[in-house]
Length: 113
Image (cartoon, rainbow, N blue to C red; front, side):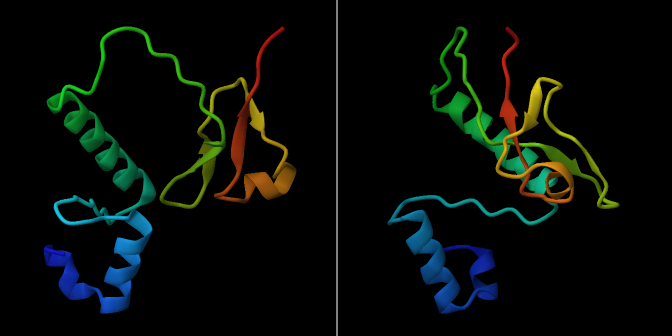
């Protein structure tokens, strides 16, 4: 593994990364270190840029149904704000107070009939 970050990782951590990612010679693994929002936004932008550069993004409407979307977004003060749209409810695996207090709370998309 070649990276400036390697000097901060012990052999077991490097082996764990390689095992979990399945990375092999000439593969690329990206690391991000900051708040979840900053890392997710940065890696998301990178994913889009690489997809466009490699011509993997196709023109046209491509619908996608997202399940288990995060229900809440946490700010710097650890206050939760709604992350999902108004047509989402707790998915039933966690609801009520547990969902509001949990970073693991997920949304269930609902349909209007």
